[in-house]
Length: 243
Image (cartoon, rainbow, N blue to C red; front, side):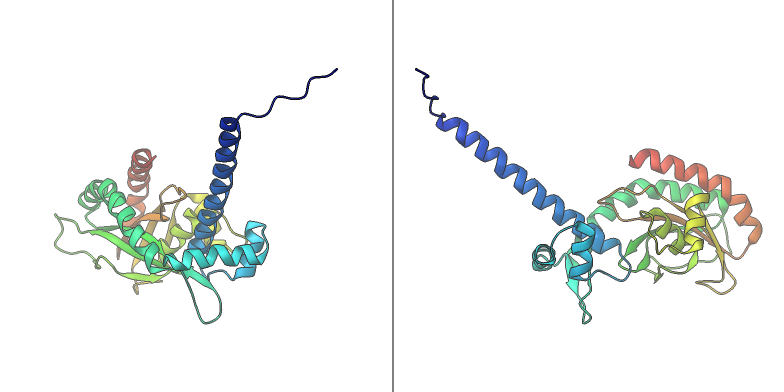
């Protein structure tokens, strides 16, 4: 006669329960982080339905994810029902930016000295490009400058294009952004400051970090030409330190 199966040990049941719970928790966390990344990197924000489609889940689940993120002020909803990055995310980003600045600033000082021009670390914040570190040349009596905290729309200027190129490719990317992604830098004139040339190199994008770029602004076209290989080498060094 066949023997009945031995009863499962209580410890085994507990272990499987913990593993199952951990898997569920990991999936929920991953979904929430992915939702946060999608909202933060989409210029016009996302609706509940759009997020559900992007995540491949029912809108009810997408709404619950967004509601939780909203409770922690990581996202906020505008009057048209679009969710965008919230103040809580900005506070977290401040600490991330601080670490990013510590790595990048020595390179900015080197560039400002060698090029005798103002250079800056610029990051994405919502649908704007924001300067989080600005270094002026110590050895030049005449140069174009701007303040830390200066911002402009993401759809203009060398920094805006470089930041868009640093982020994952999107079907909505403009021809200029696609070109910047292919070349590894963006170059413009007069789109933010009348008559000024801009040259920006995107830093390598990593999920969890804001898209960032190194930007040079000057009235001298010859300096832009000279700066291209110098900035490319410095950005390669920064990327090596960041990753």
